[in-house]
Amino acid sequence: MNVTINSRKYDQSIRRSWRADLIESVGSMLVFVGEFGDDVEHADLGLIPCGTVSYEYYWLDRWYNVFRFLLPDGALRNYYCNVNMPPVFENGVLDYVDLDIDVVVWPDGTHKTLDLDEFEKNTAVFNYPDGIRIGALDGLAELIALKNSGKVPFDADIFAIKEAISRVT
Image (cartoon, rainbow, N blue to C red; front, side, top):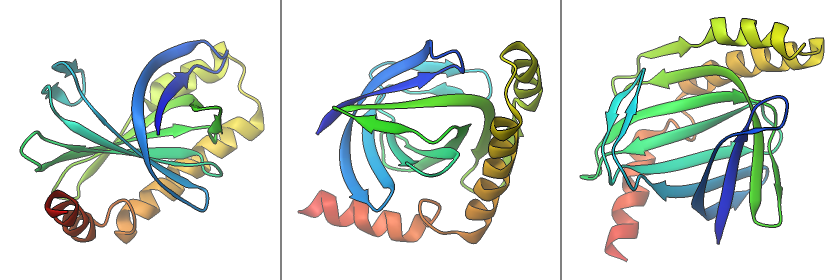
């Protein structure tokens, strides 16, 4: 199922929008796959080449999502994680409010938290309620714990096996 994914600001304006295919739905987790149609220069990630595949993990009850970027040759490029309000999925559209904090995880397992300053700035600009601020910071802590546990979607070996099987079948 091809869907539209909208990343929104707190005021509901669309920050970014793209298309992806829903490939799995398990409990509250939805997994999508998409492909970069053009080279993208990212301030923190550098060049993301055309043909990079993005596996995108969203939970309808969690305050984060995880993108797993694979280079055109299938090698893991990195993970890019967003702290966000729990998304809503209706009528072929997934919407989420991005709360600015990001985490990049490199193939060697190291990670870096990004944009905490932007979160603090937007807390004032948009007057985030206490529940939003607490949800975002709790989501960040849960996300880092998930990464450190090596569970889905940070379980590279299991993912590689699934990918190899899907290419053969």
